[in-house]
Length: 104
Image 1 (spheres, helix red, strand yellow):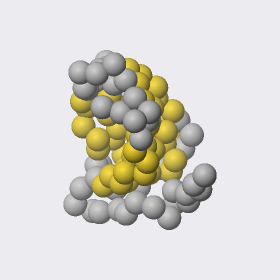
Image 2 (cartoon, rainbow, N blue to C red):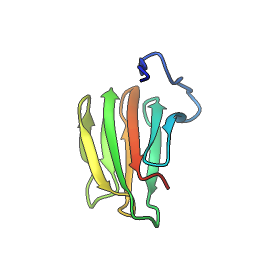
Image 3 (tube, rainbow, N blue to C red):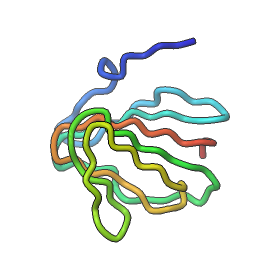
Image 4 (tube, rainbow, N blue to C red):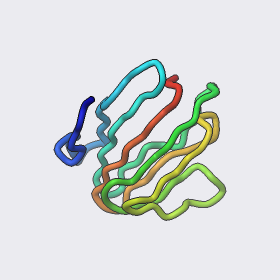
C-alpha cells in the first residue's frame, strides 16, 4: 500500500504546464498535471482502446476537445475514451489528476 499527498507533489512553472508520473503499472497509469493560469493540456487523442479520466483537484478551468469548452472546477471529473479528443485549460492555478487504463 502506498499513500501520497498530491498537494505535496508536482510543481508549478510559469513558463509551461508540468506533469509528474505518480503511478505506472500494466493496468493503469496516474499522472499529476499542474498549470498556471492560461496554460493547457492541448486537445489530443490516442489510437488506443483505453479510457482516460481527468479529475480537477485544485483550481478552475475548462475541459476542451468537444464542440464547446465545459467548465471545470475542484471535484469535476471528465471520463472518456482515450481516442476521443480531450484536453484541459486552466483559468486559475490548477492541479489535475489524469488516469489512463490500461496505459498506452
